[in-house]
Length: 370
Image (cartoon, rainbow, N blue to C red; front, side, top):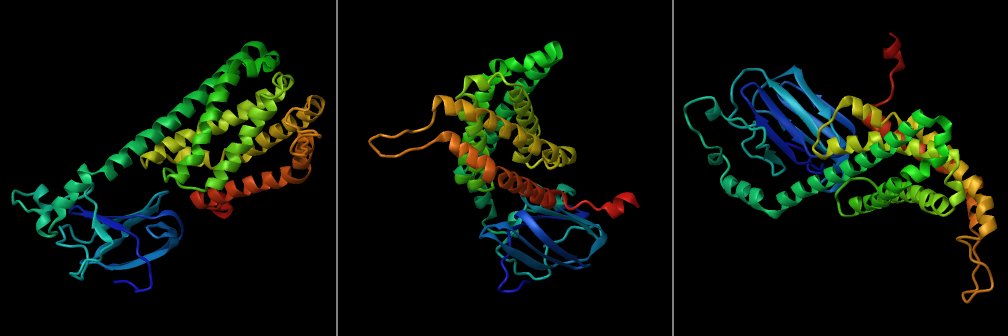
């Protein structure tokens, strides 16, 4: 059935008269290898499974033949799905040629259709799997399922809140600009700063999501992205009133909002494993023009703020003091612009590019122009 040394992911299967479906529980799948034969399915890939991010695989010797030409598979964020077309329209008494079922192979009850659904002869699937009903009932009434449902509701509502907030910011800014043109830019912070404050403040919750297992991804990346934006807004913009009337605030808020108007709808759909190809493409493409623009606007804010903080001494610590410690905030800003601004931009752009490659794959220019 499989090599002893090879880790196997959880695989859920179901059938109809004409098809067999397989759902492989692997996240962040990389380098999938699929060998689909008439009565054999060999799969391997690197992904996030029950034992962490490792290489998983299996070799299924099917009970009966399938049509390899009509069978398909697709790689999603949270799993890999196979749709195998049976060579003959009939129900299989089991999936594998071997009567011994491996522990990692389970039934997908959401998609299961049995013979009794199409005939008058009743047959209970629990006859084939003793104790199955009790297990299903326990899972249906147990806390794990309820917690999973509540988690999805929470994530959906959180992403919806962020989407509504950035819709408000964008619509108010565009309406004011259409009415007053460039004269509206000076009042951008006064008009939408309060909503931007709420949205960015609640974004700090996103650092906790991967910590408690609500979302995948790196905690460090969340801290860097959200923390960096928080410093720009809460320290450099809210901390200096003279910066709040500059035109760059209009452009910065607009770029931030456009990014989030794509990101949060994508997250809302993914909570329930729904994927719209256009939204996915937009999520992993719109950053190409917007991220550099955002970095430039943030750099302008930092540069313009340096003389203001030199003058006021805000966020700086001067000697003498009890701790015998000195800190000059404008010097920190200068060091960031000189030494870390472009490396940080490159790091973020490269990270997004790698995510785009993993999700959409490389662009095939040869096919595009043939």
